[in-house]
Length: 238
Image (tube, rainbow, N blue to C red; front, top):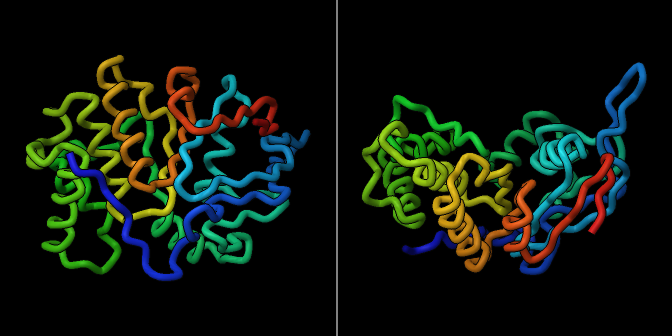
């Protein structure tokens, strides 16, 4: 199985070792009454090429952390730099474009369209890039091959195992050649064998240079990462 190596355009992403995620006093409070501090003020850097696990009990703030890091929610204070870009200075359209170019998402529930093949699900990720459909399909086929599913391109999700569906979801996340792979409980719906296979794939992508952040409640998953962040009551610690 060949692993996807990201081809970064010159100046398009942080250089090796530079922060991909950089929080400078980032916090998020939802308005009340009463106000709820979902994420306490946080200074944090995740450097290019790191594999980081984020752990904590239910309701601790893991999802808020993922939403802020993934540009799905905006912090109410502080500065968030993604690949050195100050995201707070961007309008909604620019934030959406940056998220699409720089971040790949992998979720517990796969979120594959059941009426499309594996190939079409992956190609869909680049629908709005302006690439012709034929080129998108060629790129999707190559990406599926690199996650070990080149032989399952024509299968719809209903004919794939849970582990294969998650591999398709990872291929879709990689389709835009992102700087950052954000994974929310990527093994939560898998049996132990498929979970091990997906973790092995993430480790291989990390070894090839991808920055990987995994939200998990599973200590066995966290143990595979280079570094673990613990969130409790909205506070991020190491």
